[in-house]
Length: 421
Image (cartoon, rainbow, N blue to C red; front, side, top):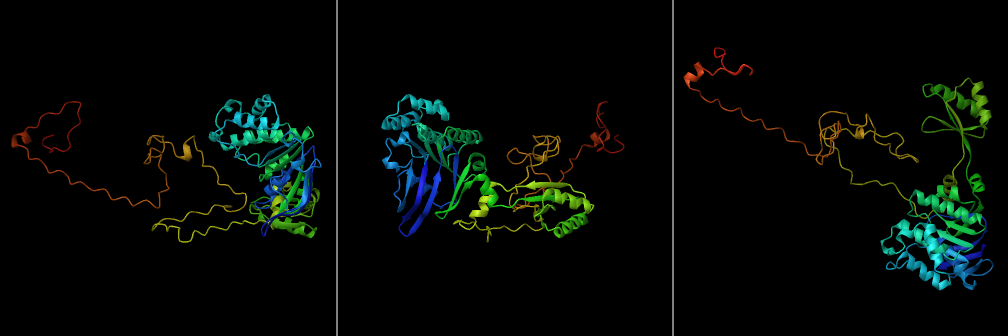
């Protein structure tokens, strides 16, 4: 078990962690959450004895890390996946750690297989990708088969399969009775992995509770109600009935209603009594991300602003139409829709014989050109130059009177005089 009591760390006049007290118990995955600069990494470094606290204590199993006998056999940690000599292979790196801790060499090959690096075990780590470096760091943490494990952003750089593997690994380690302490910024992943949460902001404790209790304490459940879009008077009628019954009604961007203060059966009864048809009546429970954002909105140090693009926006050419606004663009949760697919043609281009793709004529690099969407910044094309008609060639008088007869299969020459035909 990890236990911190009154933990404080100052760097000059800056306080990174202040009076922090918590416990990380075995048998569960404990998530460590907080905004950037909140003191998560500093706290983990003090747990591992890499930084000395200004005041307070932190122990592992009742002992400070530096007083644990053969600490690498009892505590495994991944704080920085890049802390590897680039000239060493993955196996050589783990083998040097094993020799320092008295761990048999066969354990190196075991953990390489656990993290899936056995095929690149003899390659230099400087050529590893970010995800491969994360796997190597996890292998180093598992090397001594420890009972206490600390991971700082373990899924950073991993693909979806790797993230699922880390999630299952954390749960399996906790199920064996180990203490698992994980720091991450991925709220969706923490919701699926963690059993308990410790949340800090600006170095101070904000929450120490289970995931379920954290969501319930920092969010409000609501019901989403939708009436037929073609009959807006029904929405107004239902909104009045719900408000009169003690509910709190807020309109949403898509025309639905967000209702709090009334259970779903009561909302259904009120709609039935008001003779209002419902297209949707569904419960909504806040996610871990929503609850986290609500709790930490006042302790975020770095906030972005809207890019005004002052002086950088180009004016449209004369006659060009401004782009139409996209409904919902710029709102939270909005994503650009995928390009339309019509008839199997790429980007919804009409099928036709012209162009190499059977659609629009080819563009400058062989790709189909845009249909109906001219480039407003392209230079106007020069008008085609009309070539002068060729001057008539004088023919001998005899040739004009007696032209040669055309073949039977050739069409008549309409340029010759009427008497010649």
